[in-house]
Image (cartoon, rainbow, N blue to C red):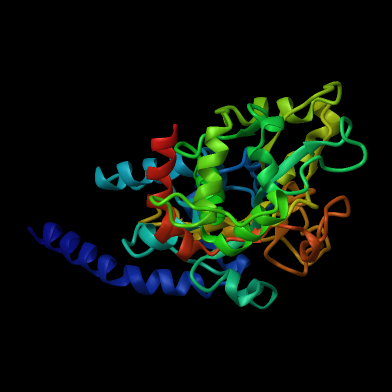
Length: 373
């Protein structure tokens, strides 16, 4: 009986100490976290990018004794899996590296499923807006891309509304927005840019736009016109990029994918390039964020891997960031340079997504595209 009471008291004490422990971990340096993380032994990371495999190798070399288990899952699947596991009382993942910031801010953080963590050493190098509600690791994109081998004089799309014309019927590609949150965020952002989309319509067609009575502006009208022009939805992102970028293609499609896909041009035989001269915009910049999962089984190692992935003070961010130091990815830490092959961040023609506004509008746009499909 004495042993049972002692165990119960110890358990209660640990539960009471848990919030304080998390707070203490948040204030620790990487060296201090490592001492605790070595006793934890491993850390599990859900990652939107397969580049987590490169992080795994260098992290384990930098921090011997900690096994980084990287799970390559797109953001939509991460959120679904986290929700299912936590509903079942399973707390197996430590860190989520995902996009879909609108859902993170609207649902996951308020419901306590994940928490924000900002390593103390990097706070001054990340703009306040990129760490206010959740820590941004990098700005990624859904950008209109074209084949610069087929169009050596520049993008064939000078105005987004060209994509709704007969010349481009069945030749515009994107991932299925009902399955990929980044594609849904792109269309949602377009729906929020009514004034710009209306001005672009008039510039393209020489007359003011007439918006259907059941739609909420020029942005939604563009989405309807795009689907009516046989928009092609592709579930495999590699196939999508190949269809646009094949260097041997003579009449290739255009479409939206991540600007960073251009990093694979030489390896894959592609000629992908961002359509940066398209008005009013080639697409969106959105945050890829790092969060700690609720009741992470390895809380010190979770914070240590986030600290590591934010990079060091070198221009490329060092081994912790270098897998993401590529054309089309922009580090949240502005001490890390933009890749020399990329359009500089201040000149890239992409709307910066407002996660809160996008989160509020997402459901309506999802309903619209399901109807259009």
